[in-house]
Length: 129
Image (cartoon, rainbow, N blue to C red; front, side):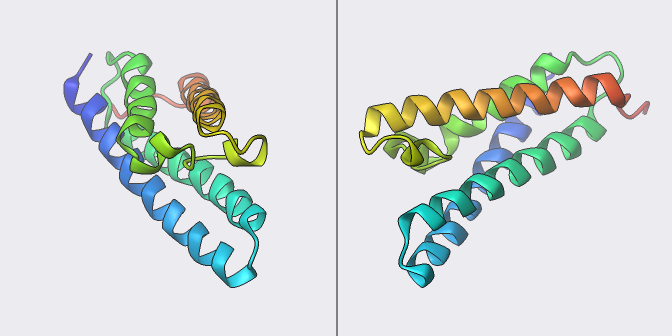
């Protein structure tokens, strides 16, 4: 596994999803609705993960294992500061308990990351540089 893929995709995912959380916070304040903000954040997080996966997939070499990208995407959850408060994905839609929201967020984040890496590994070949 290439450490650059893991670290780079984790940092990229962490930063893009923090921006998504800020945008969703602005939407929530504007709409005076936490639910609207959480739904907006959920869609933006999926978009951020998809962008991160595509960019880093295109930087991978054909011999690189897709697990490196998956590990990096899930590592982005760890680097996202709102993850530890249960406010990084859609967990707040299901429960107001912080630990429950954290576990739901991690599960959804890992599932979306796995789905993206699976789709890329079945449909695209890494850049042959």
